Each structure stands twice: as C-alpha cells, then as structure tokens.
Amino acid sequence: MMQRVFCLVVVAGLATVGTIGTSAALADEEGPKRPNILLIVADDLGWGDVGYHGSEIQTPNIDKFVRTGVELDRHYVQPVCTPTRAALLSGRYPGRFGPHALAPSNLRVYPPGTETLASMLKSAGYATHLAGKWHLGSRPEWSPNHYGFDASYGSLTGAVDPWTHKYRPGVYERTWHRDGKILDEEGNATELVARQAIAWIKERKAPWFVYVPFQAVHIPIDTPPEYKKPYADKKFYDDPVKNESYQRFAAFVSQLDAQVGRLVAALDETGQRDDTLVIFTSDNGGLAGGGNPYTGTVPPTPVLSSNLPLRGFKNQLYEGGFRVAAFVNWPGKLAARKLTAPLHAVDWTPTLAKLAGYEPKQDPRWDGQDVWPLLTGAVEKPAPRSIYIAHPSGQAVLRDGWKLIAFKKNGKRELYHLANDPYEKTDLADKEPARVEELAKILAEFRKGDRDDLPEDLKGIPK
Image (tube, rainbow, N blue to C red; front, side, top):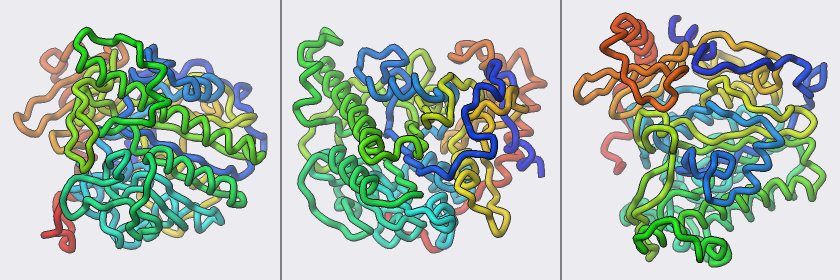
C-alpha cells in the first residue's frame, strides 16, 4: 500500500512549480479532443547537448518547440536505455519485470500479454506505429508487433551502426526489421527512421500514435556530410582527435534535431498540427566518450556528450544520468512555459491512456500518475511525491527536495538536498542520519515491488 501511495504524488520541494493558474492553460473547458500522439525519444542525448541549455551545438527545432511549448525542466527517466523504454511504455518501474530490465538487454522485457501504451491506445481506437529502436526484446518473436503496434520498423536491439544498421557481432547482429521480419536496407539509419515515421503520419487517419525512438545520438557516431558542414571549421578542442570526435557528435545531434523538425513539418503539411500532442525526451543522460563495438567502419569517439552543470553521466545514479532534456508541445492546448515539477517516464502511459479515453478493465498497477493537470497548469502546486530509480549498481529515491542514493557494492549511502544543491556537490548523509533512514524506508517499500529473479523461460538465452 505504501508503494502505491508514494507513486501517486509529486516531489514537493525538489523544485517549485511556480504560480501556474488555470488561466495559463489553454485546454478546452470540457477537456481536449483526443489528440494524435507523436512520442519522440532521443538516445543518449545529454542535458548540455541542446541549444536551449547553452550548448554550442545547433538545435534550432528542439529550441523552438521548447520555447513554444512546455519545457519539462525536471523530467526523469532511468540511467540507461532498456529500463527507460520499459517504464515509458508500461507506466511501471522497470524492476517490476525482472533484473534484466534494469540494464541494456536483448532479452524480452515484457511477459507475453503485457498491456503497453500501444495496446491501450489501440484498444481505444488509435492506429499505432513504431519507427526506430525497440530494445525490449531482440528476437523477432518479441517485436513491437506483439505488444500493441500495428506496424514497426527499425532496430530490435539497442544501438546500430548508422550505415550497416547492424548491432554487435553475434546472434543479434542483424537487427534491422519491418514488422519483425529481418531485412537489409541501404541508407542512413536516422534518415530512414524519420522517413518511415513521416510516411505513417501522412498516410494514417486520426487518431494515431506514432512512437519514434531514434538510434541517434548513441554510438557509433556518424552522419551524412551535410550535417558536418556547419562544424567543419569549429575548434572545440586543441587535440585534433578529440576535436574531430566532437565535431562528428555535434553533427549527429544536429541531424537528430533536423529530423524532429521534419516530423513536425509533416504535421503542418497535412493539417494535423493543432490536433497532435508532441512529446520529446532523451532515454538517459549523455556518455562522455565511447568506442565502436558495432559492425561497421565508423571510428570511435573519445569525446561525446555533456550533462553539465549536472553531475554524472549515463549509467550512473547522479542527476546527469537520468534528468534529461524534454518538452511537450500542443498549439492551442498547452501554454508555453517552464514546468519545474518533477515527472518520470512512468507518468506517460497513465497520462496518455486517459487522454485517449482508455479505461482499464483491471488494475494496471501503474507506478506513474496522470500528469495532465500539471501540463495544463490546472494544478498550481503539486502534492509531495516519491520517485524511484533502480539500477544494477543500486537505487535512488527522490522526495521533498531530497535524494538518497544507496549503492549496492559497498553499501554506501549518499544524501543530497536537491532543492538547494541541484548539482549534488555536498553529501549530507553523515549530517542527516534521520533523513537517510526515512528515505531508506521509502526505498525499501519500492524495492518490494521489484522482481529479483529472471523469468524461467528466459534462462539460457543469450543476453
């Protein structure tokens, strides 16, 4: 019971929402018309990699949609890719599905028959489509088509080479598919994914749900030449190897931004812009640098992303690992502003399902909550809430402006007052033992809902 109570409220004190009255909301008094839903997910995009956070990288489209929509200043996900996707499409924390769901995995995350956001929207009359990275099961029999998507296209695994579209050498190397059928195709992966999503937007009748989880900007890092030109003469580092690496990464981010612009332009061209809710987020924080273990010839990138001024990187329990750049944009329905109330990826399924008119026939056991009143400004001050982040290295819990990190390896616990110390510079665990124990109890309640063993039918299957 405690777990359900904790996941029904918002972290108070972590950040103030500001004075957002109902007059700020542009939603119709009787509620908005069921929208088309365009959900875009970037891969490994860091907090400091976008123009509106001060980056030298050019992201004019993302910046524009932040400026004209709702900037989600404290949008939390998970520290790595598979867990965020598991949470995003289920409304449940990834540990509920087993330990394999807490790390990048090729194993099936959702048990057969699991209701996902796609299946919920489909039952409510939506056409459902995916273009991009699945990473919730890398075998064709675990493809998106088995979890509510009418059609799917892209990679079943995590990252792929942008030109060969292949994963790492091994049983999952050939991963590019259409509707679960493996295929070989020429072209740049990012461009192909955008092209497919645009075709669906133009061809399908409303209402529809198009999920576009790009492989960009995960390693390997490369783009077509036109995206590299604006950075060809830029000097980011004195070291020529590091400079070329960052030039290539900057071009990749700009390519991603261009595709976001193309997707929204397709809505304008087809007269669907005012009827479409656009959501954008990264799946986790950025990575400092990386090699290239994937099948292809793209060189390594010793310099990559930035999460500054946040602390930490992808695969860590500090803010830089899972507080990400995000926005929501719906002209005429959502007023432009910055929302500083903390949200989590688990919130999108209950929010969008309700917005679409979906009514669960049984308890969906959501860990997330309907955050539509926060997005519209109908709620001025959110109630307190606990947010739970699990990772193979440990767990974190956020509540009332505080954050506790409990590391698994050495049992160490760190405490940060994010309301006053958002960049986690001062560990207060020794000075605040009572608060540490209070948050540790909350964390223990969350952990009770996680599954510690691998499902029997997945044992022995390559990860």
